Amino acid sequence: MNRKALALARRLALLFVLALPAGCGSGDGVSLDYTGAWQGRTSNGGTVAFTVEGNLVTALRLVDPQGSIWFPQAVDVQGDSFSADYETNTSATDYVSLQCTFDSIAHGTGDYTMRKGSNLLTGTFEAQPPL
Image 1 (cartoon, rainbow, N blue to C red):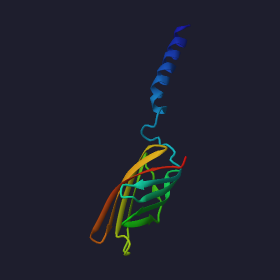
Image 2 (image 1 turned 90 degrees about the vertical axis):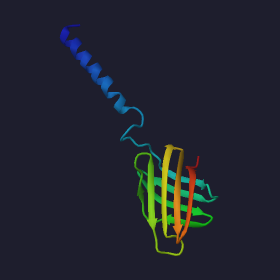
Image 3 (image 1 turned 60 degrees about the vertical axis):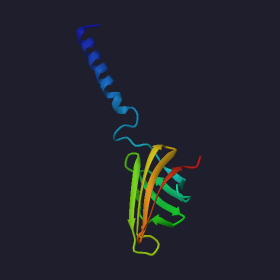
Image 4 (image 1 turned 180 degrees about the horizontal axis):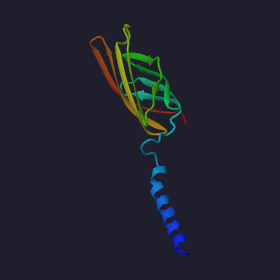
């Protein structure tokens, strides 16, 4: 091999090695696809259900023995998680905050807080898409 061809081969090999980590895994900027209808149980004996379409949670409902809420607007999935906050002036619920983190494309965990007047309800949940 002549010198120019050898130098070019070395440069190409170096570029390949430098570019390899950027395309591997699910590092920063790369999201997994969590699309599906997720369901789960809360730590208080209730249920959580949400639908992910692309990078949006398009439907979200939390039913707890002491209160329930559905979120009327879509929320963004950012990386491996989403959070939703909703405030109402109804007798059912004054404020709800829910956060979910996906630890795989088949399992997510989260926590929530619901406030109705002076009553505060907190809990955790696990959810997964149907298999």
